[in-house]
Image (cartoon, rainbow over all chains, first blue to last red; front, side, top):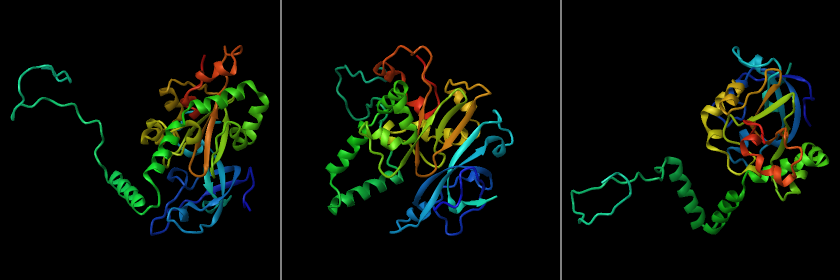
Length: 96
Length: 215
């Protein structure tokens, strides 16, 4: 069951994966940034396990999180309403 | 003699007399190409798959072209009920066109007077291949992937697309299991056109969101 609700404020963990390196679908540029849950997309096999061919990867809730462009880039050239939506797995999100 | 492929002369070729040749069009064998070929040969040798199955897959992939997406968009422009279904349940709506999207999920992003959507996959090259075919090279380039998230308006401008400042530019980073199809705005001047007449107006780039559709 999804842990976060639509509209909830969340932060992307600001961490690098532990050693040894894992396959990670959380882009570098968004780590540590805060946004709003745009939607819950469903539960999907954890790509961090799937990438290594594990037979039964754990399912994780996947969300689309919406961020304000002006919050991400200091020199952003665009309207205040410009946004970026990114798919992020639950294990990378924390409640704000 | 010029450096073209014209080769109409009567003398005998002999050692020491070399003509310039056209460069080979094939890329060199890279590490990953060699690995792919080795794995493919092994899979065939061990009877896990056949060369014919690989050929069939490639043929299937090549048969997917952006016109498939254009037909979906055109229908949504002329059929309000279909558009509603396409946005609410894309999987079901596009199955009417015979497209099976497998385990992935499709999200249809409607462009409006208030919002312009553009799609990228910053991590690799995720793309709705069953509808649009293979992604263009620029979509996979590091330049597009790194720039469109931080300066989307400038990148759109380079595609000839100017989005007014009061209209939101919404970038979608396709990082995981969703795939995205932009539903462009129906262009002004196309009011009297039929569904079939609209299809050729809708190009691949408009369905990625780097251009708008014009008549």
